[in-house]
Image 1 (cartoon, rainbow, N blue to C red):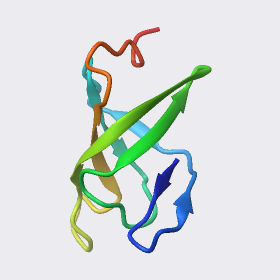
Image 2 (image 1 turned 90 degrees about the vertical axis):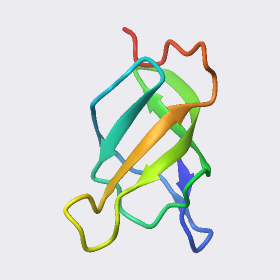
Image 3 (image 1 turned 60 degrees about the vertical axis):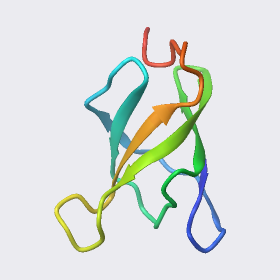
Image 4 (image 1 turned 90 degrees about the horizontal axis):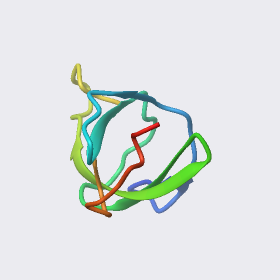
Length: 80
């Protein structure tokens, strides 16, 4: 879950790629999100807080993509 630039709550399914231990690139994001804002991600019955570290420019090939970084530096969110 996230909040867009207009203050509306967003909940949507996205595709995860380029996963690292502490972050990931998310694709298929609809709506304009705010850099450095906090979002909640869920997967496999896990939920964790992340910061938006990067936002793809509108009207560019990277539109709809964001980079996220885990708030908890000891995260195991991406591990099975």
